[in-house]
Length: 291
Image 1 (cartoon, rainbow, N blue to C red):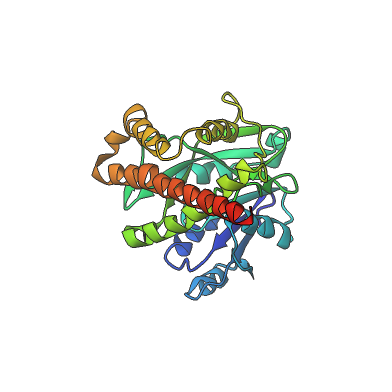
Image 2 (tube, rainbow, N blue to C red):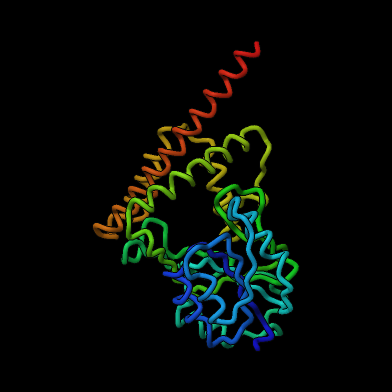
C-alpha cells in the first residue's frame, strides 16, 4: 500500500464517471476514501469493487462536504489528494505521483495540479481555462476546506506550496453532454453564489486567503474576485465575457468552446447578478415594511 498519500473523492450518482477515475489511479496502490451524498445508481457498488472505503453524508454545499470528508476518515498517510468524481489522473500526473516521496517535499505543504477542462468532448484551452492550477494535494492535518466559500470549493494550506505544471488533472463531466443538465446545475449554483455575495456585502463572509496578484494561484484568484465584487451588476458579465473571448483568446476554442464561454462566462454570470438584485429588493421591501 502507498505510504505517501491517499485519495479522497466526493460522489453523487457517479456510475458514469467513477470507473474512469478509479481506473486511472488504481496502479498507484493508494488508500481510497469516498464520501457519497446519497447515490441511487451503481456508484456504491463500483466503489466497493475497487475496494474503496465509503461513508455517506447529506450534501449541503461543496466546501462543507469536503470539510466533513477530511474529518470523518481515519487517513494515515502524510499527504491527501482530494478529487471530484468527474476528474481523472493523466499519464503525466500518474508518473509524478508514482515517483512522489514525502522526503523530497519536507518544506512543502501543498501541491497544485494543472487542470485540463473538457466540455462536451472539447478541451477548453483558452479563455483563461488553461493553464489552471488547483491545490489538490496537501499535507494531512494541514490542508483544509475553505468554509468561507458557499459554492466555489478550494483547499487551503499554511506554508509553502509548489506547482506541477505538467501534472495534468483531466476534468470532464459527461453528464454535461446534456445541456439541460448543465443549465439546471448552474441555476442552483447561481443561487449559492448570489447568496454568498449578499453575505460578503454584509461582512458575514471574508476571504480566507489574502488577495495578492503576484501570490499563489489561489491568492491571485482571490485578488480578481475582490475586483469583481466591486464591478457594477448587470454590466460585469459583459466585461468578463469580452475578456475571456478577446483578451484570453476564447474565440480560438471553436464552436463548442465558444458555446461554453458564452454559457459559463456570460449567461451564468447574468443569472447570478439577476438573483443578487432580487435578493436586495426583497431585503429592502422587508425593511420598508418594518418601518
